[in-house]
Image 1 (tube, one colour):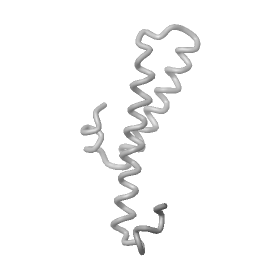
Image 2 (spheres, helix red, strand yellow):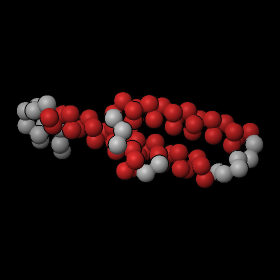
Image 3 (tube, helix red, strand yellow):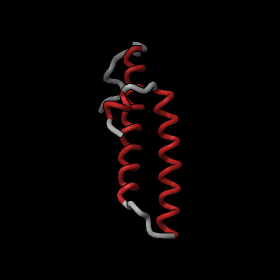
Image 4 (tube, helix red, strand yellow):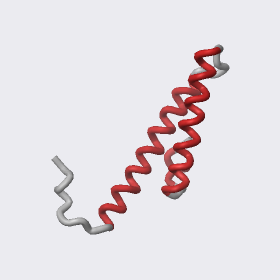
Length: 78
């Protein structure tokens, strides 16, 4: 799934997508350990999709924090 498609989703939809992808990855790993997968690259694709979703969720969290107007922005930086 492309990042542009994921950006159209809300944070709650992204969290649901993350849950679904995590479940898919679990099932793929189980199938891979038991038998040969038709498309072993699917595991890699799902892992990358999970990373994309997690990145977008984090972006939403940071935007909320910025909009909340918390003190100085350098508090959490090192």
